Length: 216
Image 1 (tube, helix red, strand yellow):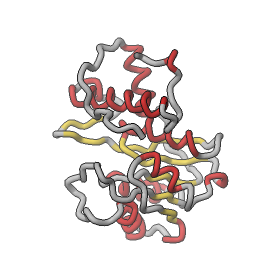
Image 2 (cartoon, one colour):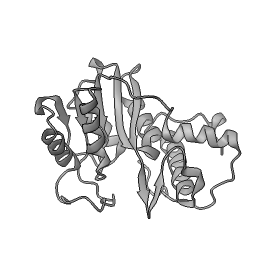
Image 3 (cartoon, one colour):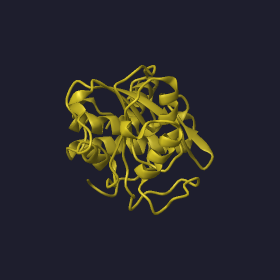
Image 4 (tube, helix red, strand yellow):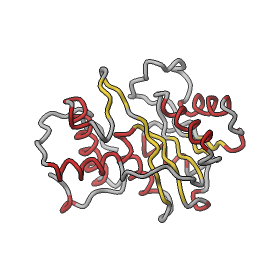
Protein backbone atom coordinates (compact mmCIF):
# COMPACT_ATOMS: atom_id res chain seq x y z
CA UNK A 1 0.00 0.00 0.00
CA UNK A 2 1.30 3.42 -0.88
CA UNK A 3 2.50 5.44 2.13
CA UNK A 4 2.36 9.16 2.69
CA UNK A 5 -1.31 9.98 2.06
CA UNK A 6 -2.18 12.72 4.50
CA UNK A 7 -5.13 12.15 6.82
CA UNK A 8 -5.60 15.93 7.06
CA UNK A 9 -4.61 17.40 3.68
CA UNK A 10 -4.54 21.10 2.93
CA UNK A 11 -6.44 22.80 0.11
CA UNK A 12 -9.82 21.16 0.59
CA UNK A 13 -11.98 22.43 -2.29
CA UNK A 14 -15.22 24.33 -1.92
CA UNK A 15 -18.22 22.13 -2.74
CA UNK A 16 -21.80 22.74 -3.77
CA UNK A 17 -24.74 20.85 -2.24
CA UNK A 18 -24.71 18.13 -4.89
CA UNK A 19 -20.99 17.51 -4.38
CA UNK A 20 -21.40 17.44 -0.59
CA UNK A 21 -24.14 14.81 -0.87
CA UNK A 22 -22.10 12.69 -3.28
CA UNK A 23 -18.96 12.87 -1.15
CA UNK A 24 -20.91 12.04 2.02
CA UNK A 25 -22.18 8.80 0.46
CA UNK A 26 -18.71 7.89 -0.83
CA UNK A 27 -17.01 8.43 2.52
CA UNK A 28 -19.67 7.23 4.96
CA UNK A 29 -21.35 4.64 2.76
CA UNK A 30 -24.94 4.61 1.66
CA UNK A 31 -27.24 5.37 4.60
CA UNK A 32 -29.06 2.19 5.58
CA UNK A 33 -30.91 0.95 8.63
CA UNK A 34 -29.24 -1.90 10.49
CA UNK A 35 -30.82 -5.25 9.68
CA UNK A 36 -30.25 -8.86 10.68
CA UNK A 37 -27.12 -10.12 8.88
CA UNK A 38 -25.22 -13.38 8.63
CA UNK A 39 -22.13 -12.04 10.39
CA UNK A 40 -20.35 -8.97 11.72
CA UNK A 41 -17.00 -7.78 10.37
CA UNK A 42 -15.11 -5.75 12.97
CA UNK A 43 -12.24 -3.70 11.57
CA UNK A 44 -9.24 -3.40 13.84
CA UNK A 45 -8.67 -0.37 16.02
CA UNK A 46 -8.25 0.85 19.58
CA UNK A 47 -11.35 3.06 19.81
CA UNK A 48 -13.95 1.62 22.25
CA UNK A 49 -16.50 1.85 19.46
CA UNK A 50 -14.99 -1.22 17.81
CA UNK A 51 -16.18 -3.51 20.59
CA UNK A 52 -19.08 -1.43 21.91
CA UNK A 53 -20.84 -1.48 18.54
CA UNK A 54 -20.18 -5.20 18.11
CA UNK A 55 -21.72 -5.88 21.53
CA UNK A 56 -24.66 -3.64 20.63
CA UNK A 57 -25.28 -5.70 17.51
CA UNK A 58 -25.28 -8.89 19.57
CA UNK A 59 -27.63 -7.45 22.19
CA UNK A 60 -30.05 -6.34 19.46
CA UNK A 61 -30.06 -9.83 17.97
CA UNK A 62 -28.80 -8.65 14.59
CA UNK A 63 -26.06 -11.28 14.25
CA UNK A 64 -24.37 -14.10 16.16
CA UNK A 65 -21.11 -14.61 14.24
CA UNK A 66 -18.26 -12.11 14.55
CA UNK A 67 -15.11 -11.68 12.46
CA UNK A 68 -12.64 -9.65 14.51
CA UNK A 69 -9.47 -8.21 13.00
CA UNK A 70 -6.40 -6.28 14.03
CA UNK A 71 -2.84 -6.93 15.11
CA UNK A 72 -0.52 -4.24 16.44
CA UNK A 73 -0.38 -1.25 14.11
CA UNK A 74 3.14 0.10 13.64
CA UNK A 75 1.86 3.60 12.85
CA UNK A 76 -1.59 3.99 14.38
CA UNK A 77 -2.13 6.40 17.26
CA UNK A 78 -3.74 4.58 20.18
CA UNK A 79 -7.02 5.87 21.56
CA UNK A 80 -6.62 7.45 24.98
CA UNK A 81 -8.85 4.75 26.49
CA UNK A 82 -6.65 1.93 25.16
CA UNK A 83 -5.01 0.17 28.08
CA UNK A 84 -3.20 -2.67 26.34
CA UNK A 85 -0.57 -1.20 24.05
CA UNK A 86 1.33 -4.45 23.61
CA UNK A 87 -1.41 -6.89 22.64
CA UNK A 88 -3.13 -7.26 19.26
CA UNK A 89 -6.27 -5.20 18.80
CA UNK A 90 -8.35 -8.26 17.96
CA UNK A 91 -7.27 -10.04 21.15
CA UNK A 92 -8.64 -7.26 23.32
CA UNK A 93 -11.80 -6.83 21.22
CA UNK A 94 -12.46 -10.57 21.37
CA UNK A 95 -12.06 -10.48 25.16
CA UNK A 96 -14.66 -7.70 25.38
CA UNK A 97 -17.11 -9.69 23.24
CA UNK A 98 -16.72 -12.78 25.41
CA UNK A 99 -17.28 -10.69 28.54
CA UNK A 100 -20.54 -9.49 26.95
CA UNK A 101 -21.77 -13.05 26.60
CA UNK A 102 -20.85 -13.87 23.02
CA UNK A 103 -19.86 -17.52 22.66
CA UNK A 104 -16.15 -17.83 21.87
CA UNK A 105 -16.82 -20.41 19.13
CA UNK A 106 -18.79 -17.73 17.26
CA UNK A 107 -15.83 -15.34 17.17
CA UNK A 108 -13.41 -15.73 14.28
CA UNK A 109 -10.32 -13.59 14.59
CA UNK A 110 -6.91 -12.84 13.17
CA UNK A 111 -4.23 -11.00 15.13
CA UNK A 112 -1.49 -10.26 12.59
CA UNK A 113 -2.88 -7.51 10.35
CA UNK A 114 -1.40 -4.00 10.39
CA UNK A 115 -3.70 -2.08 8.05
CA UNK A 116 -7.12 -2.19 6.40
CA UNK A 117 -6.13 -4.42 3.49
CA UNK A 118 -4.54 -6.91 5.86
CA UNK A 119 -7.61 -6.76 8.13
CA UNK A 120 -9.54 -8.21 5.19
CA UNK A 121 -6.99 -10.55 3.61
CA UNK A 122 -5.89 -12.05 6.92
CA UNK A 123 -9.53 -12.51 7.97
CA UNK A 124 -10.08 -14.53 4.81
CA UNK A 125 -7.66 -17.12 6.22
CA UNK A 126 -9.83 -17.75 9.28
CA UNK A 127 -13.35 -17.26 7.90
CA UNK A 128 -15.11 -18.60 4.80
CA UNK A 129 -16.90 -15.59 3.30
CA UNK A 130 -18.57 -17.77 0.67
CA UNK A 131 -20.94 -18.92 3.42
CA UNK A 132 -22.45 -15.48 4.06
CA UNK A 133 -24.67 -13.18 2.05
CA UNK A 134 -24.66 -10.16 4.36
CA UNK A 135 -22.33 -8.39 6.78
CA UNK A 136 -22.71 -5.65 9.32
CA UNK A 137 -19.46 -3.68 9.22
CA UNK A 138 -18.16 -2.09 12.43
CA UNK A 139 -15.75 0.79 11.84
CA UNK A 140 -15.29 4.52 12.29
CA UNK A 141 -18.01 6.44 10.46
CA UNK A 142 -15.69 8.40 8.18
CA UNK A 143 -13.72 5.23 7.38
CA UNK A 144 -16.76 3.20 6.33
CA UNK A 145 -16.62 3.97 2.63
CA UNK A 146 -12.93 3.11 2.26
CA UNK A 147 -13.11 0.01 4.42
CA UNK A 148 -16.25 -1.39 2.80
CA UNK A 149 -14.66 -0.80 -0.62
CA UNK A 150 -11.69 -2.82 0.62
CA UNK A 151 -13.96 -5.69 1.65
CA UNK A 152 -15.68 -5.53 -1.74
CA UNK A 153 -12.34 -5.83 -3.49
CA UNK A 154 -11.40 -9.13 -1.85
CA UNK A 155 -14.42 -11.09 -0.61
CA UNK A 156 -16.80 -12.91 -2.98
CA UNK A 157 -19.17 -10.76 -5.03
CA UNK A 158 -22.76 -10.31 -3.97
CA UNK A 159 -22.33 -9.93 -0.22
CA UNK A 160 -24.51 -7.12 1.13
CA UNK A 161 -22.55 -4.84 3.45
CA UNK A 162 -24.27 -2.54 5.91
CA UNK A 163 -22.20 0.04 7.83
CA UNK A 164 -22.62 -0.12 11.62
CA UNK A 165 -20.35 2.78 12.38
CA UNK A 166 -19.44 5.04 15.26
CA UNK A 167 -18.29 8.68 15.10
CA UNK A 168 -14.67 9.54 15.77
CA UNK A 169 -13.69 12.60 17.81
CA UNK A 170 -10.58 14.65 17.07
CA UNK A 171 -9.63 17.46 19.43
CA UNK A 172 -13.18 17.52 20.74
CA UNK A 173 -14.75 17.60 17.25
CA UNK A 174 -17.08 14.72 16.39
CA UNK A 175 -17.16 13.61 12.77
CA UNK A 176 -20.26 11.91 11.36
CA UNK A 177 -22.20 11.99 8.10
CA UNK A 178 -24.53 14.78 9.23
CA UNK A 179 -21.98 17.28 10.51
CA UNK A 180 -18.56 16.70 8.89
CA UNK A 181 -18.80 19.68 6.54
CA UNK A 182 -19.53 22.11 9.38
CA UNK A 183 -16.03 21.97 10.88
CA UNK A 184 -12.52 22.38 9.52
CA UNK A 185 -11.46 19.14 11.22
CA UNK A 186 -14.34 17.28 9.59
CA UNK A 187 -13.65 18.70 6.13
CA UNK A 188 -9.96 17.84 6.12
CA UNK A 189 -10.50 14.35 7.54
CA UNK A 190 -13.20 13.52 5.00
CA UNK A 191 -11.21 14.95 2.11
CA UNK A 192 -8.22 12.92 3.25
CA UNK A 193 -10.35 9.77 3.17
CA UNK A 194 -11.49 10.63 -0.34
CA UNK A 195 -7.91 11.02 -1.55
CA UNK A 196 -7.01 7.70 0.04
CA UNK A 197 -9.92 5.97 -1.70
CA UNK A 198 -8.74 7.35 -5.03
CA UNK A 199 -5.07 6.49 -4.44
CA UNK A 200 -5.65 3.02 -3.01
CA UNK A 201 -8.20 2.31 -5.72
CA UNK A 202 -5.67 3.19 -8.41
CA UNK A 203 -3.15 0.89 -6.69
CA UNK A 204 -5.67 -1.99 -6.72
CA UNK A 205 -6.12 -2.21 -2.96
CA UNK A 206 -9.86 -1.46 -2.93
CA UNK A 207 -12.84 -1.06 -5.21
CA UNK A 208 -12.05 2.32 -6.68
CA UNK A 209 -14.02 5.22 -8.10
CA UNK A 210 -13.94 5.49 -11.91
CA UNK A 211 -11.90 8.51 -12.97
CA UNK A 212 -14.83 10.02 -14.86
CA UNK A 213 -16.93 10.04 -11.67
CA UNK A 214 -14.39 11.70 -9.40
CA UNK A 215 -14.49 15.24 -8.08
CA UNK A 216 -10.83 15.80 -9.07
